[in-house]
Length: 91
Picture (cartoon, rainbow, N blue to C red):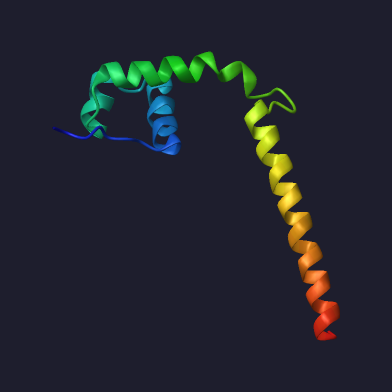
């Protein structure tokens, strides 16, 4: 059984931007990157449906906010450990 290919967000963006420029047909772009034209059209649709959020300020998903809070907590904890070790070692 074949394993599905996964593409990076950067690659998808590159392909979609080429498709939006309309210098080549979707079929030509598909041949160029070894992709099915339907896949390019799907990515293009997803890109355009989310395009209105690009210029919104402070758009974070709830998961992103939770992760951000956890990272700040971890940074604070590590900073306290560094300060403690500096005192103990006398530096």
